[in-house]
Image 1 (tube, one colour):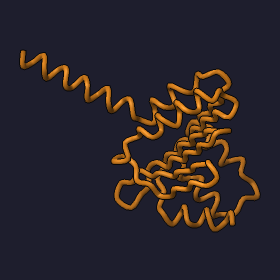
Image 2 (image 1 turned 90 degrees about the vertical axis):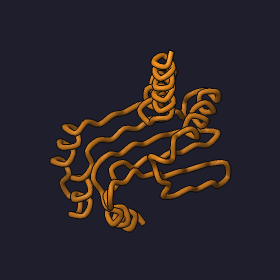
Image 3 (image 1 turned 180 degrees about the horizontal axis):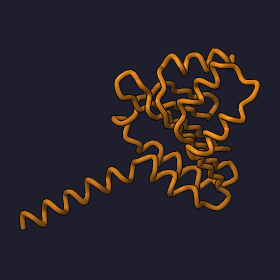
Length: 156
């Protein structure tokens, strides 16, 4: 009986972890009607870096640190799908991610989350939700906060 109870508790813990992971959100919503999903592999990123011609060295340096990129856009999906997406995003465990920026303006919510190991940012998650559009961008790599600051400064 004790063994069965332990197995059930472990199964529940795994289910709760899976239910709130970024991968499960991509998996759940990429197949929705009118959803757009793009996953850029490390090989394609490498080819993209080779094709960067006139970009400045700072941009090339940051791009070298990107390992993978995924984008999910739900703009053309139904309102019900967007509402479900917003609810699932709210269930993300923030003990894995640290909030870097939160913006809530005119019904549009933008949240930038990071997962760090030491002083390196391993994952950057950008979540945008509004009544008209929902999007999720997942960038994995090995960045420093100074890299992000430099990128922001270059685009201002």
